[in-house]
Length: 179
Image (cartoon, rainbow, N blue to C red):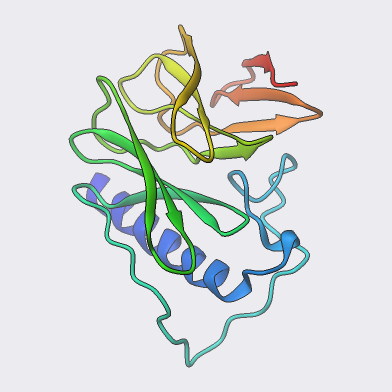
């Protein structure tokens, strides 16, 4: 079952990546969090309809584990990767050049967490890690870490009205002031 889930996520992320590589150049094409925005609309106003034949413009190889999810902000892709460790990569969307990577200590398996990009920071967590991380989007350096989050598996942070929220599968939520 997990294998089918991973394959489905990989195909979704690949298609999403192809879309964004095609739509780059317009600020409205940013996809800074899971399902595009705080409302989880799954739609960007600058989206264009994709149809065959599609042409591969760029291939990005992520070591061990592959792509779990990604967020797009400007000309950068912020990719979460699973496998034996949980790592987030910042990659140039036009060239594939890797700017930085950040590995979560103690992370394991599929991250299951789409990064959220807001105010120059990348927010994420991972499976087997009890922290929510805020990483400088330009440098990949840790700005802060919030412990006591249990696991971020299957949960993605979102920013609403300058407040960072980490949502659970239940009705609970934890919030932290971003600005």
